[in-house]
Length: 100
Figure: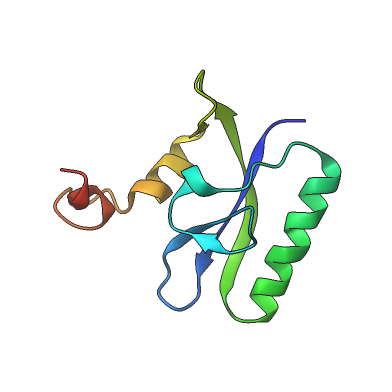
């Protein structure tokens, strides 16, 4: 199975969030729980479904990731890289402004 992480948007402010090992949601994908098999995928999907029912998140889905040599994860798709970085219209706004 391909490595995956659960991502969604926080309902309060629309921020992209990632499900962590502790069951909380983080704004940083590097803190996400990595899903390695079908059973884990079903478990995080159930947690994400409950978060939607509790009106905490919306639009949850599994996103593919890969591991770097140091064990950290990296996003595979351009879409997920953009979601993690924020809007692409202006580099002086959003998350990318914090990284300048």
